[in-house]
Image (cartoon, rainbow over all chains, first blue to last red; front, side, top):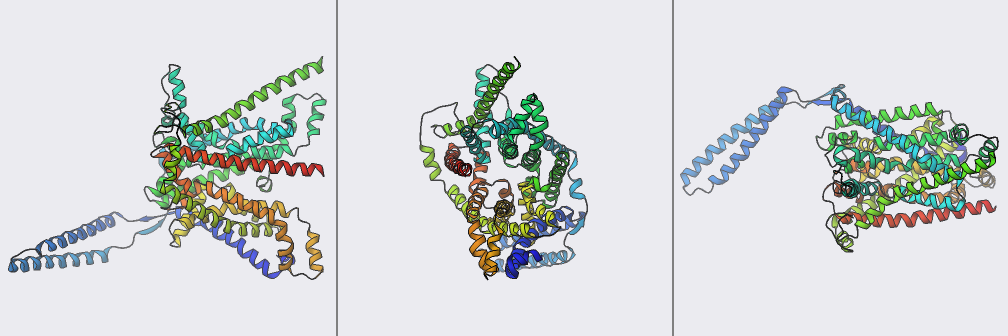
Length: 349
Length: 273
């Protein structure tokens, strides 16, 4: 704290602390805590409670019908008959209203119950989808690494500066184009009457239902997130002293040994970042499965979360699902930090 | 002999690598090319396999789409708000982490970058739930807040990278000459950070504008250009979407080229030194 005051004086230190704590507490920590808290309770309406509120709703309906009858009755031409019908309607309305009042006093606010209910709600089928999502994301991450490592190495170490700049441009353009549009391009290819099936049927095979089988999600996801692996690896490989590679080569080391003993160990932080980003984006992707399944294939875990929030309006269960996903991502980060022996400072740079 | 075989294998692996690069870039660009071509096809669905002739009419269809324009306006409003929130927060965080000498520094840093390692939908959800407790429903405001949570982290990392290269003796000299802390901040630190402020604003704008996953969970009943594109892709496909794709691609190519040229110039200047 003293070091801050020394650099910035009291006033600016106060401003810096105010802004930082707003961000940390108000935008990062508190929302996460509230979400977690939200996931551990539900509103218990109870069995009788539900029947009671249904009965109250019915009585309100009856009141509405009566007021319609009343406006009909007011049009009656015979004055004596009209007065009689109106009086009858009014007395019934009063009776219903008093019944509603007594019932509403019995009705209590639904009880807030803390439990693991929202987590047990998941059941076998949703748990299976969760595991499938994690497994698919791990596969995407692995494929992305295999595809990207040679590219990153080429740009960083092999290509001439001019060629490297062009390759870099070729990487940045698809990287920067909106995720949805890149996925859309694959929708056009993998659709039932898309480009891929055009060639498949042209060659005399049956069309393949890429979207309905769920393979479309996987293919588009690799395409959408593969480039998040290139840049972190490139950044670390670039800092490697090329003399080390040349020395190893002069001493007769084969290519794979140079990579295994020199380049890969040096690139570890970059690989860790690339893997974390790719995994996190895949497991947490809502856009790709949303577009690439069109509701026909089995859903991605994120879609279950979305449905809990915005279709069945069960925010408590939705929070529980979201927290489950978050825990999986955090575990993955810790696992990679352990495997690659890198710290958080090296990861987020 | 061994030298010869070495250059032979070198040549072969070079060819393999080049072939690999070509395949990789075909994989990257062919889908985009297909999307672009379909935007000029005079056919009611996005398609390149059924060709009905060249047309520009989908540009007109898109230009007459009121919901898209409303979404564009919302996107810009959110992006401007995000810049206004994340630059001060990111700068405050960067100053705090670079200058605070404390054993909690690592923890602090970890918390401040954690939004970058959190799935976007979680940021959207937690912001939505948090503000709902304060009786603020989902809308443009919550979307801007949710996005700022992680865009501030990007800004912070950029500011930190710049601050690490700052020459502290300038500030000390200013203090020796009697400048107050506020004066030396405005006269020395802020001008030094100016290029980063500009870069962070541009990157923050694009991060916000392009965001889907965080926004869709925090925006309530409102829509941005990108969430609207998302729902169009799922319901009622039209080549107007391809036209949006064409526009995004053109803008991206222009900016990416400028960025690479700028980087090359910097690199040349560095190596000339």
